[in-house]
Each structure stands twice: as structure tokens, then as C-alpha cells.
Length: 101
Image (cartoon, helix red, strand yellow):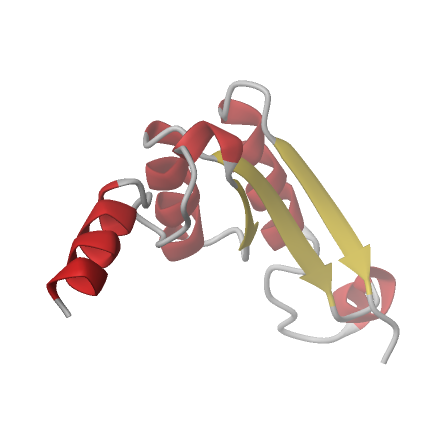
């Protein structure tokens, strides 16, 4: 039993903060970015810890149709904001995926 515990504790010493057995710089993390504060802070913290961060935003609406609606809020601005945050990361990527519903 002590032998297994030693293996586990040695293994744990090599795990990064996300629980993977490799260095942060060798770990790619995809962050779903809404353009809001929460996802932006998470992406920034992961980047500061040395992770390879990629931001992804899903566009679940037609921007043109959304802008035509009375009291439409944030149509397209959320994606712009997410791209702006990702651009501040040195060498980070951001992609947006359009999903037609």
C-alpha cells in the first residue's frame, strides 16, 4: 500500500494546476469566451500561469437579424470584445464559430 501511495504522490508532484501530468506550457486550454468579465479573467489567469490559451466564441444568432430587433443588446459586440481580450495575450488565438439555429 505504501508503494502505491508513493507513486501517487510522485505523480501528483508533476501535475499542473489543471490536473494534467505535463507542464503548463505544454498544455493547450480552450476557453469559451463570452466577451464578459468572467471568461476574460479566466483566460488571462491561465495565460499568466503559462498555459497555451485559445479563446472560442459561439455566435448563436444572426447579427443582422438581431440588430433589426427593437431593444437588441450587444449583437456582435460580445464577439468583438472576446477578440479584443484574446488579442492582448501574446500569441494567443481566438476563433468564432457561427452556429445556425
